[in-house]
Length: 339
Image 1: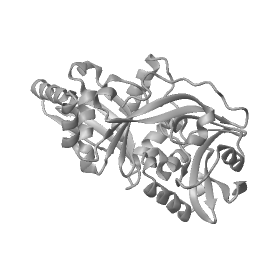
Image 2: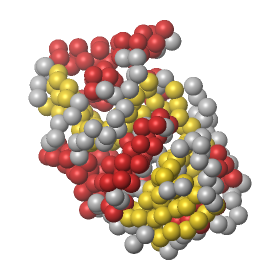
Image 3: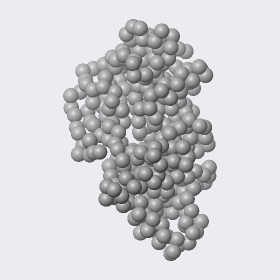
Image 4: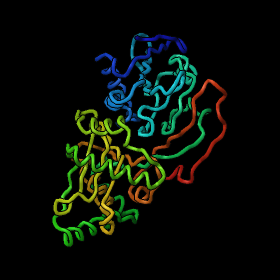
């Protein structure tokens, strides 16, 4: 059932289950994405939101209307009466009110229109200034611009005295010399390989003090349904680096029409001297332009390989949007503002 409220005229908000959106509403969402490049990440696509909705309950979409035209969407996941979180919880690496730039929305009107008291965010686009009073921490997501192709990117790295690509080429030649022929597949639809990746990553996270990832039914189902999702606007990507037919590194991620999001990687610890994870990532970077992808987003966590490979960062913020008084506590990590 649809709920309608008026947060601030002339805007109105209707709330629907993500799986109940009409073809016209989905087309309107896609039209906003096509016109607003800031929402290029696959996390902003209806494909991602509806995929999560197939695996968990309570995934909703606020539709923002102006004079009968869809001018914005806001996906969220209910976690209790009046409380919500990003769609997919810990797996959601980008969040935003997906609206046309000219739309004058407010966070207070948004909460009222959705019938919510609170929404927690941790990867919100920092350009969304209406959230400023509710920010508790600023961070960055590291990204690689490949819009001019791999050769231009490689030249840019070398001009900046960074040579990670040359280093991985040396590692790759060593693999071939010592292990046998090396192959890379940007995407394979192999569910057995995906199971192996998830089991290995789950064990790795458990050793790091974060047990339980990929052990719940919905998380496992999400990744396998992602693997089966292959559309022009949204698709899963299972990449594999092999030596003599043996998988040395694997990555499960997803793409939109233009952006490949780097998500979950594992590699065989027994072959760490060859840096198979780094070799695979460089192979992904080389392959992306040929797949029509102009950017690889490496995510928020700060690692040395991201500092060496990135071309730019995307500022993101975290905090709690609430009908209560906004928080004034602000933490700025050392990496914020790195260019």
